[in-house]
Length: 276
Image 1 (cartoon, rainbow, N blue to C red):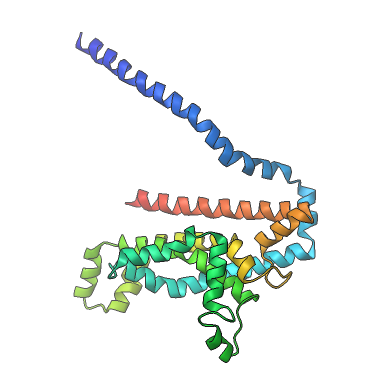
Image 2 (cartoon, one colour):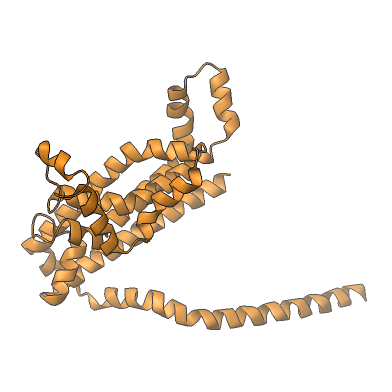
């Protein structure tokens, strides 16, 4: 009798859940169509022979080489100078919340605002313009401007992920290393970094992918000069008006790279959570 009542109660509780699940599934379909259908149609529209033909074109190759070189350089510079900042944020830097907001701000700024902001700081008549000019350095409309624009919008992704990775290192392990006589540098090198590598690696991957796809700040601050500052996103923009096959080729490449990076990041964090 008791088992029958328990079974009936279980059926009654499962029924509302299944109903809600069915409604949620039905309601999710429009959003999935908006998010996934454009990506699938992009892949299905691209034909292999057209992709191979476009990949052989000089402008396509120049855009790919420039994008890969500048985004890789951006990640290297971000890791060198962003890791100390991530360390400070992870160890409760004074005014940390304000610093976090300021660091994350470039990720939500309109691209045009980001480009204008870079001009006001590093342009010929910007805040640092006269100083840079005195040193014989001119940044706007050069490959250096491409990297600076990429760093401005992509570095926050690395800093955030690396900071979380460092903050998740158990304090007891750091204190134990200090008790054993390790210096702060040794503790960071042999304890913190090995344990925080997943967050650092994920942040570097996200930073690279974001830098590779940067468009708005680049076209304003660096311009759109073929072979000099025309990156893959800018070539997609130009190709859409001039040569759609080239735009389609580069768009597919960027899509596949972004998918691979995001999947890798998910796998890194999934492995990390399973190990815990």
